[in-house]
Length: 259
Image: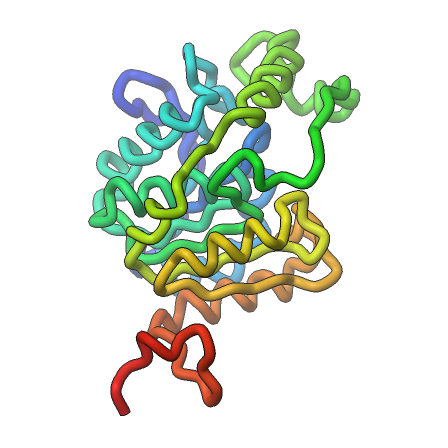
């Protein structure tokens, strides 16, 4: 059941599903929260894995702190959560900003990560194909924010503007750092994603143990737009982390196991 926990002095809204399987941590997108997408994955993964999630600082049910929307803050927070709550190496599933956080942990603290699933993620701010202008939040978004966030209602607009400014210059992860990732990694994007396909493919090629899935007929919201297909891809990856041995290897020729 979700509840508040004290995460190194800050009240953080945390989710945990009961199961003794390997740990999986869900990392939601920017300006989003766990409840916006956990329902897509939990029915398929809960029987086999021990699922965790939390609303990052300034998101969902978790109140804000100074500097919390910058990625260095969010990466430190995720590491704290893995160390203090999960307490074991985990499979990280990150959507959008959550994927940026997940890959950053795999680079800086690889001992905490068993595998990565990166959904609509970018390693550099230049990877987005459009400028994201500010638009006034809808009445529905305002109502949800007022009902969930411990922060004052007027701060929703402030957070959106702050996040948009940060996305203009962050993240900025060198491709050479992506090459340090040595765990099985699934890179996922919609075929009409806000992240350019060229950027996504560069990320996939930089990760030695990478696999790539472009989900047809979807956008940046692929997990919600094709939930059955998305969940099937994720579940298949997590239940067989062996590196693919294909009939006609091209890009994987140099690191195929000996027959």
